[in-house]
Image 1 (tube, helix red, strand yellow):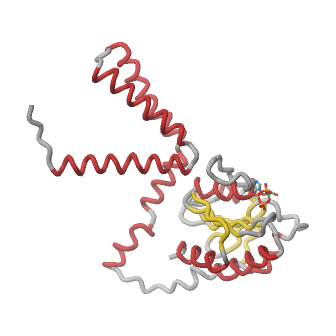
Image 2: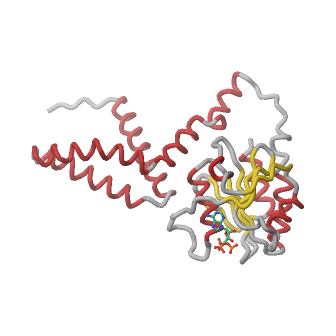
Image 3: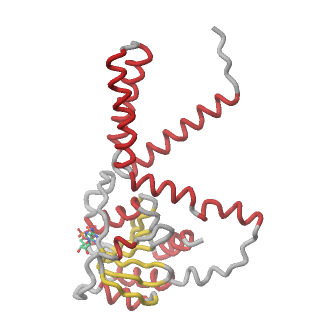
Length: 256
Ligand SMILES: Nc1ncnc2c1ncn2[C@@H]1O[C@H](COP(=O)(O)OP(=O)(O)OP(=O)(O)O)[C@@H](O)[C@H]1O
């Protein structure tokens, strides 16, 4: 039998491969890779049962499970799906195209004014091994996490950051949230990541920094109380043992 195989089919296969790879990556980052394995195994059995063996009864049951399964997956992965859609629609992703038609003459220095005080505070806290967890909000509002803490609403200032995380300060536990160049809140409770790939030596401070970067597009900066190391969690990935310069570069890149 002659099967016509054109350029459209190659593009089709490439797009499916890209989709599967991105779903795999998203699940790996959020620590739900076993679910991906389970889905793939279920799909393989479904294809064998319905297409190859042509078992009608079993096929009908599995068809029903698949239609309900899509709904279950949407509920299970609502945070990941939300993050994917926000990333897709994020102005950063499309900025290149916009710039081609509307060159950006806006001054970026105001948008980045929190970076230097933040980096300076983190370097000082690293030296004194003062534990800190600072989240920088981007396109996704962190209102539900801000509400768990105490509202500060102050300009970003390195001495204020150090003061808040000072060991005996009443607000030192939990996370500080920065949005629109302001310290919005402190002592906020973040979602904890269940990712198994991060080193066992890292505890809840690092896991909750990673957690917020998985559930939103925010970037979290963590200073370890144990080692004084500076880490950054963004896009569901943890970058550890960073220098002050690395931190500045990552935050500058983020705010472009
Ligand atoms: N869900 C959470 N949201 C915000 N902050 C949290 C959360 N869980 C723990 N923390 C913060 O992390 C601190 C505990 O850190 P822990 O020692 O478990 O983490 P760690 O990653 O090993 O960090 P370190 O290297 O600083 O010890 C708590 O005192 C609290 O300030």
